[in-house]
Image (cartoon, rainbow, N blue to C red; front, side):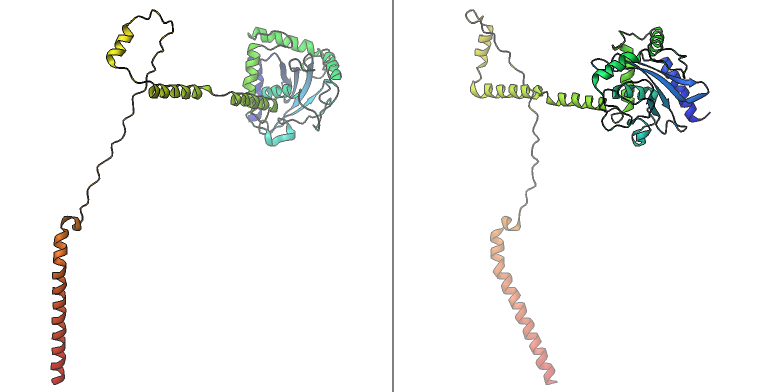
Length: 325
């Protein structure tokens, strides 16, 4: 069994173990794991596709998941051309953005969010009026596929039976266009696995949340600074009362004043300051005995001069002796 086949079998089992009521996907047969059909609930309101249920096809390459799958819608939607490969950041049109960690669940979650995107300039995309898309959404529920395991059932019947299976698995479903607790959790997990580059709608939402967080001013430092300033003003403006007076004032009942006594703020103990290390004292020779140096200076000069004169006399005598010889 090839790694690609093992991966597809694992994904098919995972979709059945942790089902999502928003979509159903399975291979068209047990003999062909590289051709899947899906039934997809439209994005939630107020999207024009909210009431629609769409059917499509996923074709996976033999080297999946190293290479991305391709997608095409078989149900008219007004958003994508019928039976034509569409250009998405998770499809074969953009292999450079595909990551092998993604899967069919991730692709269907992204595909559902892409339906509300702009179709201008997109391969396989359609740009029609919103009224046309809403009309297609209403007609899509009765659309039938004769080439997959649905056996001629309508999209509404296929998704209805699948949601019954989801209820048996413990998935809570509110309504056709609503969110559910476990299904919403599965989609969030798929979005995290898809990454920011695969789902632009999710990336934009995260950027907006981050921008909102950055716009909220941080009041913690401001309040701390204000408390510190108040303490500084209190310390410099009011003299500290004597201990006896302070004790008497604390013990005396306040009968005429109704103003509550402010609670003194505790100050952190002062941090010990490092003590400077004593530097070794350097005593110069001139500081020790300046008088001795000044007195010995002339005597040394005279001795040196006397030695020089003696050397000169000896040299002259030696020269005179050599000339005489």
